[in-house]
Image (cartoon, one colour):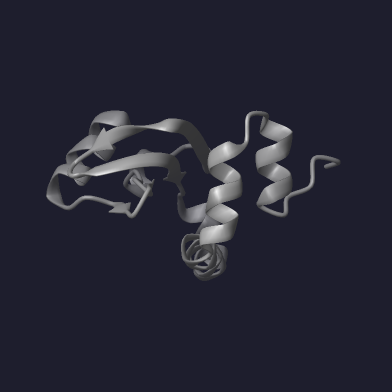
Length: 105
């Protein structure tokens, strides 16, 4: 899956400002998930310094919800204040709270 994502990234960078949103082809994803990496110091990504990486691993199970997922990520990417809070987050619970998630389930 990682090789496929790297190959996909070589076609066109998914970096937007200080965020990157790489993704894997759906045929390689057995269990859908979204992984988040936060590095306040930043990492070099193409010509950008990236502080937040959202790695999207979706498959056919997610297909009925994919428009909602992309709409949500567009809102996150456009919200500079929220991204600034994420860049400073140090604990998973903090990240999930900032993104409006719920750990009780």
